[in-house]
Image (cartoon, rainbow, N blue to C red; front, side):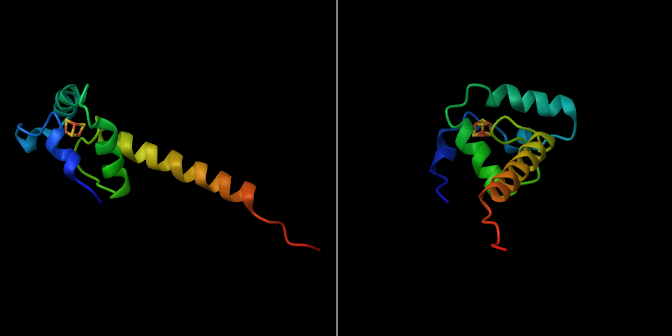
Length: 89
Ligand code: SF4
């Protein structure tokens, strides 16, 4: 997966530890940096596709990303069920 977008992130010249906070205040601090980041969508998608559990990516906390993945799984199950070809009797 292409990671060249990382060089354009607002975090590129920040201390990486800011994006791996230990508490909610740290998460909010990181999310403020992510706000308005030109590569925010790509960053979030990268974290989701690679199942990155830790840190703030694309402006989303670990918990927020878990929720997104859960919703995507549910949506894909609905699509799968809707497109299943019924067995002929
Ligand atoms: S969205 Fe946040 S973590 Fe991702 S590249 Fe931008 S500033 Fe960095």
